[in-house]
Length: 142
Ligand code: DQA
Image 1: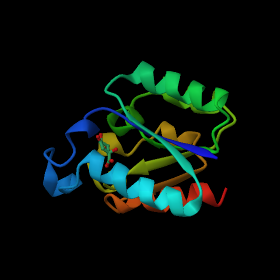
Image 2: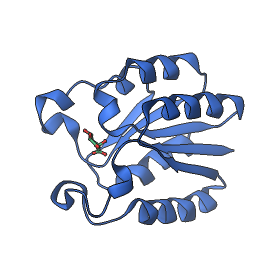
Image 3: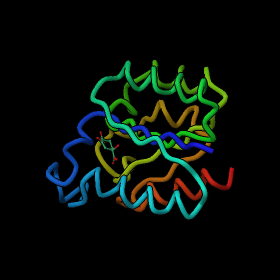
């Protein structure tokens, strides 16, 4: 009953990075909150961050091998560029829920395309750190 929570580039700088857009919570704060929630839901969590596209691809494959219940994926900027991530999501049976702190559809035009969204089963965005908890609830209900 493990949910992989995979975070992409620049999310390691959360809290310091454009706080007017992404807020003041760090990724560690989000992880701590999610762990508490996961415990209540009876789920285990594998929480990771990388700045490398290929590592996200490898972790999606790993989620499949591990028989994960779901993946919450905030691919950050790779959301809008990565056909490799789209293909990886299509290549696995594990349901992937797209997550964003901000709402990319209300920002620059180059954020309006989501390759992740073309294969994800659901999307939660624009709620700040709460996007992760809503996505975890959705994962629990799958
Ligand atoms: C983001 C939105 C992306 O457009 C951006 O590149 C990010 C963060 C979010 O969580 O709001 O790095 O995924």
